[in-house]
Length: 267
Picture (tube, rainbow, N blue to C red):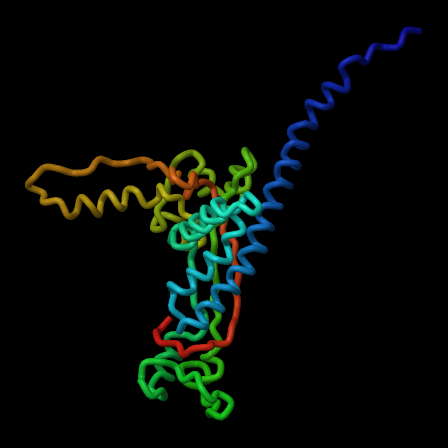
């Protein structure tokens, strides 16, 4: 009895399993990069809160501290000061870009600031000295001791860079909205469904048409001149070769630090 030939069977089985295997490998790389970004963000958020605690809770100082903590995420060479400087610039671009990074001061609140500032000598800051001897009376929702705890929350849109998997993760995270973004149908925040409003990492192209409309609103109608619609703009900064757009998903970190200087402005 002649046994049937089975040559090529292994190749067929490989072709069947290969897409799934490739997806798992690429997915593992991408999720490892997301984990690295989250760990770096945790540290950077603490550095941002510490910087804010030293500099009267000023948002610019908080962002500067966050950029400093995020710098290692963008460094690619060891003992290369040129590469370190480039990474520092990229971190600053990412942190100060409102499309990619959002910083919320959770404590003290604006109500607490307004309630406690009247107890300071200047009348413009939350008292920061002799806290252990001050009364624990609750004003504006918290005592002066609690009002001297700076708590910030940072939401950073980390970029997905692994080919193919970036689109899969993006569409899975944002659902049908993500799929429509992938198909080049861009949405402004006003068009995003209620359950995703303020949560989606906006693509830089989301803001293009609103910017065009704003510019056109300043052009006198009698001139008959207007900027054309722009479906997309370049997102790569040439000098540092960094893409400020791309497919991104939000990651969040919080940190609390005791104020080392008085809060001088409402959050």
